[in-house]
Image (cartoon, rainbow over all chains, first blue to last red; front, side, top):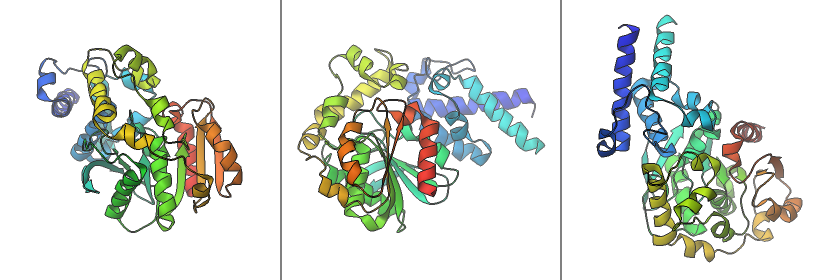
Length: 100
Length: 251
């Protein structure tokens, strides 16, 4: 899989998780893209970030340590975070695992 | 694990890491387990098994109308501790969550290794004066929220509506206000019955530090730490709070 394909597939997976968490009704109005902000566009609540972490843990296992990655950011960084930044983090984790 | 039936109420539970078991309790009202999940819990999960749960009526736990007195809330905690096993646990509680942890530790000294309290009142009813939200005036409610919530919630939108829904339930439709109002102050005699080492963490702009100045002098096993910050010190100073908790639990 090329890096671009990996990017696209990961974005699709995360968008699906977000639709499940937020509820289809609300998410239908919004296209979830790389530039979509968790806070400003999706208004994701902190308890929904926990649900996202749980889904990612179940899907990707320990090679993607979302909890640690997010906890290393301050609150302003978390608020301005985009879906694309999360996708990039996951892609990096995969590439690291492949070269290791 | 996600949902556990404990003390006849369905609780949302999250577990991270492996090692000695530590329970984290959030504050009453605007709190839920997310306040710990991405702060101290993440940091401690490298060396501990961190257990977080939403208190009844909070977060994703069951919205149940009654049972917000400390005895029932401590029984919820006890039921979850028993559900996970027989080994003694450490407890970390913020504000009202700390009152619940303290109540459990006094009643079950054999089950609690260590206790960490972050800005915990000794007058439970005080939570209602200071943390009671301005439900009928969203603009004032927003202004009274901790900074991390204020910056991320906007009037008329989904996130603020969800928060208002939770608070409306807890403060107007449940027995939380009546139950906490009827709760007596924590007496010195009760504090002396705490058998385990105790760490108290306050912000220098804490709501409740003054409650502890007198009793803390008389307690043999207490350590007090003050960090720059306010009532939500674990959100304001996550790294410093994590370090203090880790040192205390492992020391």
